[in-house]
Structures are given as C-alpha cells and as structure tokens.
Image (cartoon, rainbow, N blue to C red; front, side, top):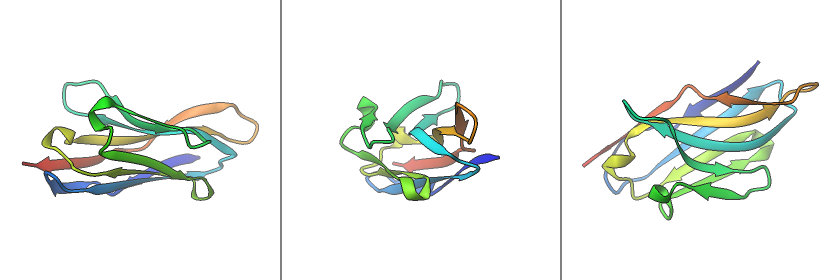
Length: 120
C-alpha cells in the first residue's frame, strides 16, 4: 500500500552531477525521517544522507560538501543532488523512509534502487 519509487540514476563522467528523486505514494498519514543509502557488490548498504521531517540533515563523511539532500513534504518526495561525482560513488542507491499510515505506527520502507555509475 505504500511505495517508494526512485528515479534519476544513470551513467555520468567523473566530475559530473546527477539528481535522484524518490516519491512516496499510497495511504500515507505522515513521513518521519527520509534518507538515501547505497550499496556495491559484496559490501553492506551504507547511509549516504538523511533528513528529518523538520529538515535537519546528516551526511556520510565521503559525500560531505558534494551531495545535498532535500525534501518536499507536500509531494512526499526526497531528493539527492550529487555533484563532483567520483568513480567510487558508483553504486545502487536506495531511498528509505519511515512512514506512518492511519491507525498504525511508523514502519520503514525501501525503494527498489537506482543504479548510479560514474566513469573515470
């Protein structure tokens, strides 16, 4: 009943930019924290950036100063603007959100993932 749909991944040269979007849909009462994670083969999924419902943000050290997370609460959408991309940013990026439906508590949801490939 709740879906997170990501878009915006693709292939880009080192130094380039991409913007990822993730829209939540379904029977949503409210959304708490939202964030972006990434995963490469053989490694654990890692937090890239997070944002609270009030707009406070946190970033992985490896992306600070290059990536910016933002959200549009009216659209139930979170964004990740990625600048100065490096080959080591290559990964599948996943959207994450804590969502409450009417008459329930908050549950964690994941998007299907979008591939970001940075060529050198």
